[in-house]
Image (cartoon, rainbow, N blue to C red; front, top):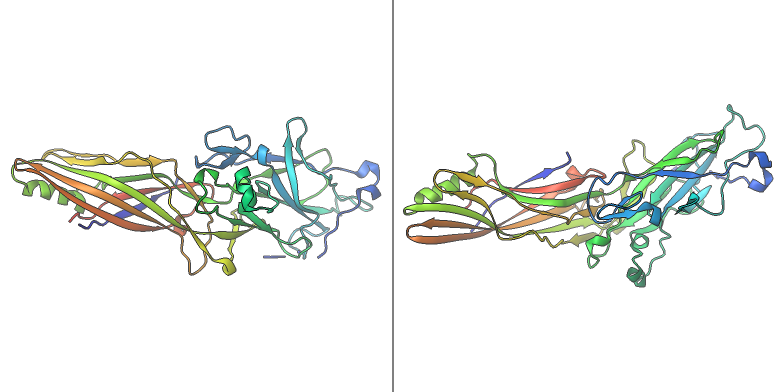
Length: 385
């Protein structure tokens, strides 16, 4: 028994681094020592996927940015703006910034705004800042999994200290045997060409989501078009029956397997605000994730009694998967959905059942949107045979 499905995707919807230097705060006049401080605006919880990071982590399936902290890279470019000359993002290098209820965002040792002779409005000293969250030192061992140090696994590497170029981090998906509840949401932010403030003004990071997400909501239904092939076929089965009573279409099984890029490089400089992902072609591996859908099955999604057609969707939620929105030329990211169904024809002669399955593949990159969840809707539109 064959069936074809039609899939519809619904959406709520490199390097440049001359030498950079940090002026010795001890060599600066005391009145000119202005410490660099940070404040944070975290992104809204635009998705309910397990592991979504928000500032306080108070909602369902949220984790707290205040608990996990963030890392900072900074480049001191002197009189030049960022990108006008080669610099190194080592004025601050993966500096861990943590939250204290009394003091706010803190780090050590303290860094100071560049100062010295000739520092005027006409001769500013520029500093550009790049941040990511949650903080990681990329020092992970297998034993750390028991301590839930998943951020140190996922954020697995950094651009080298003192190297020329934009700072970057590498990110990898959790192993296939780790539960999806431990997924690590990745945030990023930047502030370019900042100068010593006149008052105690902090560098404010507006974090955004760097990853995409798919499948938080999965639904299967019959086409809304009354003239669709599947609905015409079901009505034909009714007419062909002996003294027909009803036609029923049930969904008996739904499964999804995601084939995803395992690793990507996130360059923390970006031109237009969207995350600057690059494939790691030397490690163009794919990983599979198969969330266990838990929606109640079997479920009737269509009935016809010769006069009325009744339609309803089978829906499951809470199984979204993060994925890296980049892929190598040879390795596409896809979601493969398999739907099992059963048609029950009831007439005066008895009950006849027709069973079948249909499988479709959905490309993910064509509709990827950062910080948003893409729902999956499987629409039975073609004829059931």
